[in-house]
Amino acid sequence: MKEDVLERIILETVDVPSLPPVASKVLGLVSNDYTSVSQLEEIISQDEAFSTRILRIANSPYYGRGRGIDTISTAVILIGFNAMRSLVTAASLKDLHRKFGIFEEQHWEHSLGVSIASSLLAAQTEMMIPEEALIGGLIHDMGKIVINNSLSEEYRTVIDKMNQENISSIAAEDEILGFNHCNVGALIARKWKLPGNLEAVIEYHHAEQYPAFEDSGYETLCQIVQVADAMCLHMGIGVGATIDFSKIGFEQLGLTETQFRTLQERLKHCFNEQRDRLLE
Ligand SMILES: [Fe+2]
Ligand SMILES: [Fe+2]
Image (cartoon, rainbow, N blue to C red; front, side):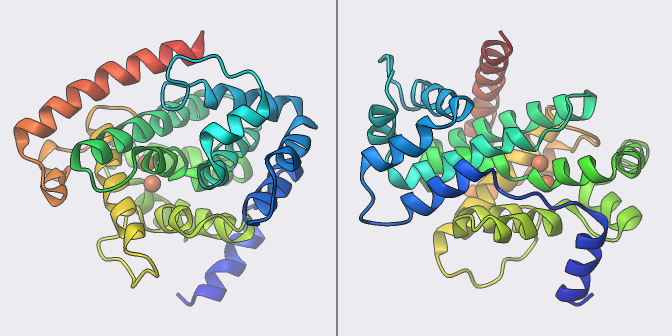
């Protein structure tokens, strides 16, 4: 199907959301080399919920390193402008949830699991910065939330089909809806002007072949998230079908089975710990 036809079908069927206003201002500011930390602080501070999220992220084990970060400016300096772009995007994801039912809960657990798995894989293989992989993992399936918001009944049918026939989410979506969460996610990524690496991972995390990306790092991110996704689906962290150990594809990242099994144990531990902490 031609891309513009597909895009029209999606736009007619699915309500593609806008980026929350504060997030879009922040994204604009961090893309500009002349922006100061105080300008950013001023915008972020206008939104209490958003400020809280940024502080929470800065105090997470990935950034906080045990320190108590209590101002937005310190958080911004610690996180850095580049990572801020990705984090703002991740924080905005929360606003996509209109309700919080079983699907949303499983989806949230899957996103958390894939983000942890991606950062563990990135650290182990030294193929990319773990923080970048973490955000890629967190947002890779954002298209699913948006489809579920607009077409919750149809999406229930998609999930049932996946479970009954043990097929992948994109196969079930393509068959029932005529498009999938990668197509929808890619539209949102372009509308939100997300960084190229995030757009790539949203659109191509299920691809068997990648297009010629402008940056070779995009392909690495797609590969890492693809393995992290399979790893979580194998462990039952996610919505729908589980997958066989033989289909995980960790060999593509140069990992031995022993290395991979050790990572899987760490993922189990980190996932349980973080989920419990976030649900407190
Ligand atoms: Fe996916
Ligand atoms: Fe996924």
